[in-house]
Image (tube, rainbow, N blue to C red):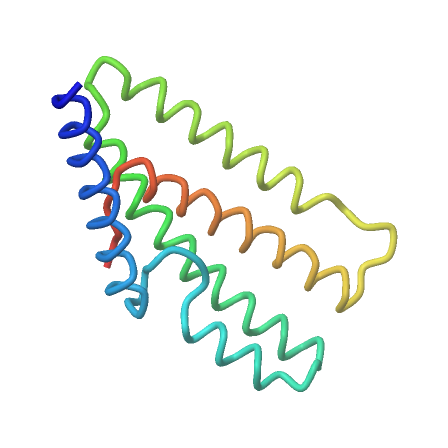
Length: 140
């Protein structure tokens, strides 16, 4: 029983340590979630579609770069005999993301373009967040 409490105490310390590290790294360019630059950009758009699209397009590029980096970290931590399956799964996810987000709207306009880029950006960010959480590392 004492060993169980010590084991739980070690897990709790590790969890708290991870949360502390995540909090300290929150201001880095590649912390989980959107970048600080994106948040600033969106506040300055004045709800103008073209400006919103520009902010989202820039953030999508940031998140694509982040996804590539954290996927490499995740793949490096994956056992060699499972890497091909992980690559295949990631490729399938990319194809599904593109299919979902690039679904052709009936009417193409600024609003539908913002919806498309928002979808790509958010799905990419979420996937990068997932890889970071699974590896326990925050990319910088």
